[in-house]
Amino acid sequence: MSVTQKERAERFRVLHAGPGAFVIANAWDTGSAKILEGLGFPAVATSSAAAAMAIGKKDGQLTREEALAHAGDVVRATEVPVSADLENGFGDRPEAVAETVELAAAVGLAGCTAFDVITVLRQKYHQRITGYEVRVEADQAERPPQVFTDVRVHHVVRGYEIEATALQEAIRLSEEKYCSVGAMIKHTANLHTTYEIAEEVIPWLVPSSASIHD
Image 1 (cartoon, rainbow, N blue to C red):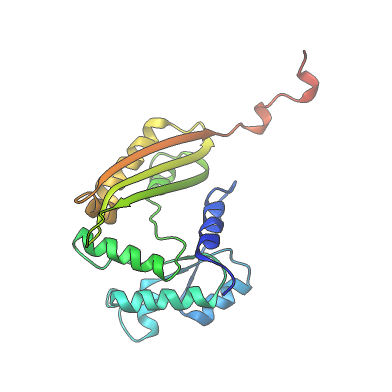
Image 2 (cartoon, helix red, strand yellow):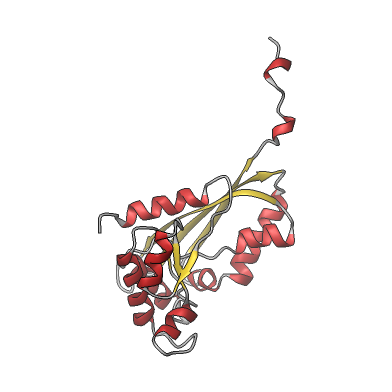
C-alpha cells in the first residue's frame, strides 16, 4: 500500500476543514469498500452492524479483535481515509478503551471520532456551520498500562455568526453526556478543551472593489 497512515490522516483532516460537508460511505466488507472508493467517495467508514452481519453475527456481538481485523482489511483494500465504528471502545475501563484506540491506530485507521459537537450546534442551536475540525494531542504514562495522563482537545468551528455560548454548551454536552470514551478517559487523564471560532463573511456583505476608496 503506497498511502501511509499519516497521509490518510491529513486527507481526513482536510476533508473536515473543507468549505462544506462531505459524504462518508459505510462499507460492509473489502469488496464494497473498493466499490465505494471507485465511485469517488473521499473516505469510507466501517459499520459495527454491517461488519457483524457479514460474518453471521448481530450488531454488538463483534469482539474487539474481529472489529479491528475487519477495519484493518478495509484499510488495506483502499487508499482513502477509513473511520472505524468501535462501539463503546470494547471496555468499561479507561485502560481498555485506551488500548483499543492504540490498536486502532496500529492498523492504520485515520479517524475514530464522534461528531457530537457539530450535531448539537446544527440540530439544537441551528448554527450555520461551514467547517469543523478537532485537533487532539495526548500524553501517556511511561509504564504499563500506559494510560492517557493529559489529553488536549481543540475545536475549530467555522461559520456565520457562530455563538460562543452555543459552542461551549455543545462541547460540555459532548464531554459530560454523549461521549462515553471521553468520560472514561477523564478517570485517568486531565482533559483540556479549547476552541476557536473562524467567522465566515456573508458574500453580499463584502463591499465591491468599486466602493473601496483610499
